[in-house]
Image 1 (cartoon, rainbow, N blue to C red):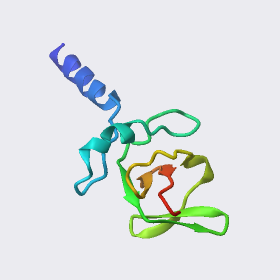
Image 2 (cartoon, rainbow, N blue to C red; image 1 turned 60 degrees about the vertical axis):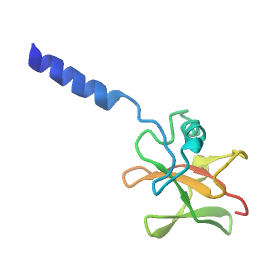
Image 3 (cartoon, rainbow, N blue to C red; image 1 turned 90 degrees about the vertical axis):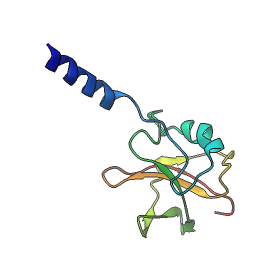
Length: 111
């Protein structure tokens, strides 16, 4: 019975959604509510339930956005773009994992 309780507790820990947080490297904790409010287009899930969102360099190339993630330029899928104009970071923001790719993208100023 004790083993069953331990397994249940472990599963509950993995099932609990992670909260978005400001990007690594000294992000401003005051921005946490904004990051936590980011939701994946279409699903409404948190953009950061699997990985952190981070501030990135971004550019427009022909008819699409590209974001500099994991030391390379990646095409931003149009269905991941959040049309938010309240970005307080001063940078483009991307939520990305190696397994899922770009889950959310928020434009930065001047992009």
